[in-house]
Picture 1 (cartoon, rainbow, N blue to C red):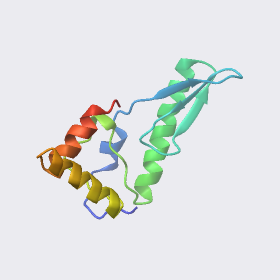
Picture 2: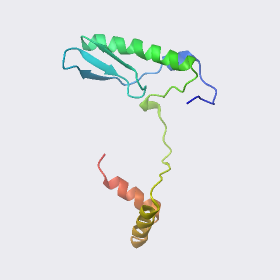
Picture 3: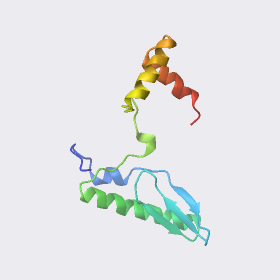
Length: 121
């Protein structure tokens, strides 16, 4: 997806800090990946080597995406939430949930917040 907003300089994106997941490789060594950056993977014989290599991979990934005019996702710790999202569902389910909310004498929105908060993440 090509970004339509004015982007910050490359140095800004290179300075972002992402969480790295280290996965032990059954054949030895470690695989390192950054979840927010699709395809940004590396490996190393030791944890330290894998972390060094993923940092190089992150920089190359970021430079390539920037030069191609692609969006660069922000780290999960920088995301902002406003408490809203759009949810599409089958009409029958919408009607069923609306009736359940009505029986409970609450709005559909409040009913859904309640039902979602009951679930364990």
